[in-house]
Image 1 (spheres, one colour):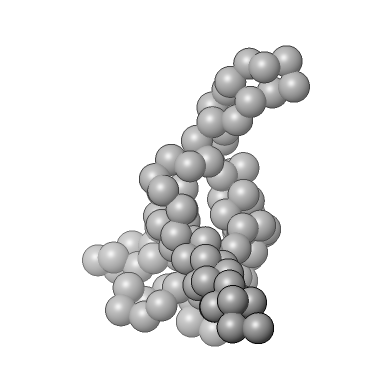
Image 2 (cartoon, rainbow, N blue to C red):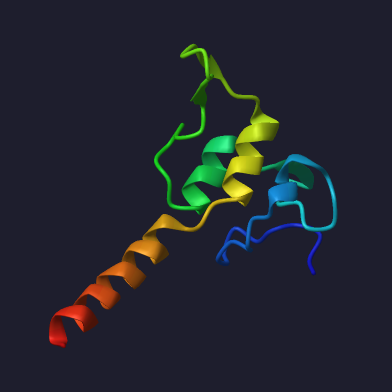
Length: 98
């Protein structure tokens, strides 16, 4: 596996370990410098709207901002929403044919 992601290729699968640094961490190399994906970049990679994971509601009802580490975890635990929609659309077509 390449030590960094290519900006010219589709993104690799995101894992729940995105909040840590390990061999599957998504790193971008720009001008000989490495950096992690931003939370918004991970949301886009998974086909979510920007800042989808920025806030959460506590059991008390209070709305709080979520740490970047937790936002990466959320996206590593998510499915690519566009793919899920396409699967659902195809299943709906099959269901209406029978």
